[in-house]
Image (cartoon, rainbow, N blue to C red; front, side, top):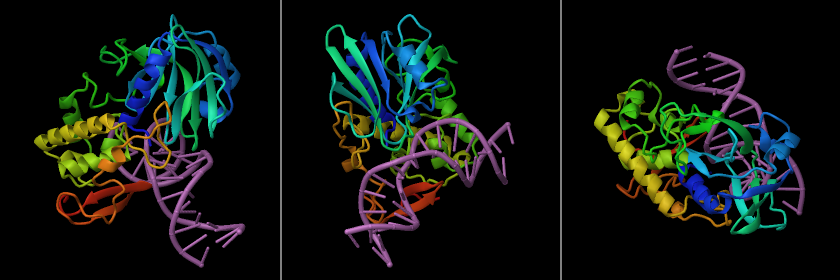
Length: 296
DNA sequence: TGTTTTACCTGTGAGC
DNA sequence: TGCTCACAGGTAAAAC
C-alpha cells in the first residue's frame, strides 16, 4: 500500500535511471492502467515515444516525469498495488505487468520501466502541467513550480519545505470530521494513508474519531511532529511491505512493517501501556488504536 | 457547501 | 479438494 515513504523510495530509485533518458518504445498491455489518461492507449504510446524525461517528481502519493521541451508530464499513481520496476532491456514479463516503457539513457544504456499492478487501482497518464498555486516548487525532486493538472488540488505533504503548519492547524479548526478521516483527505495534507494515519495518531495519543476541530492547536502541532517522525522513519527503513504489495524499483521489500506500533496489531499489547490494540471498522477499512492511551 | 458513502479491482486466506 | 466470502484500501464521483 504505497503511501508517501513508499512512493518516495520509488521516486528516488527512478530518478538516476530516468533523468535525461529518451523513451524509445511504449507498450500498453492493459488499457485499465490508463484510467487517468484522457486519450486512448494508442495516443499514449505515440505521445510518449521519442520524448526525453527531465526529472522524477513527487507530491504526496503522485509521481510524475516532466517531458523535455513540452508542457506536459508522464503522471503515475500507484494506487494500492502499483509497482514501478527497472528491468534490463527485454526482460521477461512481470506478473500483472500493465505497461512497459523502453528507455535509452546516455550513461546507463537501455532499460525497461515496467508498471505492474495487481488490483488495477493505479494508473498512468499524460497530463498538462499547470502553475502551482503558491508559486513554490512542485514537490520532491524538482525546483519547477508546475504540477500536472490532476495534482493541482492535492495538498503539499508534511515533508515538503513549502508545507504550512499554520494553514494545516487552521484547516483542522474548520473540519467537523474525525481526525483520521481528515488525515486521509489528500486535499488537507497529502501522502498519508491508512497505515501512517494509525501510527501517527497512536504516537500522538489521539483517538481516531476525535473531531478535528476539537483538537487544541498545541496538540495539532504535536500530531504534525509525530506524522513527520513516522514518515521519515519509514522512509529510512525503505517503506512498509506486506506480502509483495509494495517493493522498490528493484523489487525489494521495505522493513518498516517491523516498526509498526498499532496498524495491523489487533489484539497485541500496546507497546506503551500494555492494553490490547483495538480494530475499529472505519469507512470500508480499519482503524487500529489503543483505547487506553488514545481516549476520545 | 461540507461530509459521508460507494464503486472500482483482484489475490489471499478462513471457514465450511 | 473446492467453493464462497470477507478483507485489504486510494481516489473520485455520487449521495446525503
